Image (cartoon, rainbow, N blue to C red; front, side, top):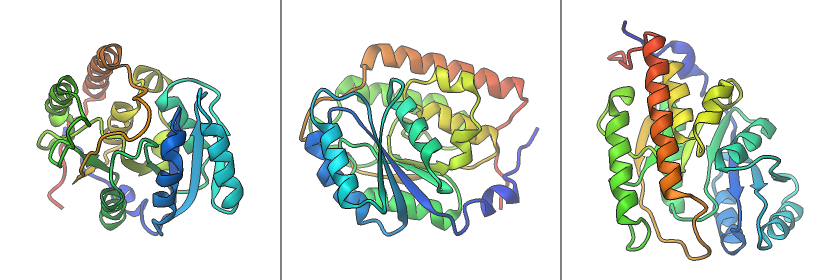
Length: 257
């Protein structure tokens, strides 16, 4: 069965507002610089920082930023656990039509994040960054992670009906309804949200654009990702999403238009 991208999908992103969700846990050393970058993107009209139970002073820094820019920045303490939960809480608190995820570690440069936002608004489709074809700064990505990222890129290429692309880049922009209408089981399947967002968008017949981005090393703190246990969870999520698409008799093919 051939699935065509509906006209409703294309028009749903037209003339829309953008909310930037910044999940932040133990990122006080990055947060001011990251928010300076976020504030410089004119397309972003709403910023939501979700602080995830930090052991440093991330909460204090976030509150200070919200006090300085009360008309634009909102800050919430995360009620659940994990990055995807933080992103979901930010998306649900948003009043904008599009939700951009901007990781607080500052590893994707400003100019590259701008490209992702511009591509989404230009094509009227969701978009995500692709670090695997960009310049990766020494020390930014461990060899095991690089291999695993390419593995998942290959596993997901039939779903995307495209060449392998970076599935785990945190820089993504999707319509808000992708978050608000996501099934509970899918939310619980993916600890980071990358696969859940892409899988749900594809089930909704959305083509997802990809933009090459560069990837820098952290200048502060450590990653909050659990590489090995997280990898097992992502494999499980991939299998379940394939099964979901198969059961839905979904074929990820795009129209020529």
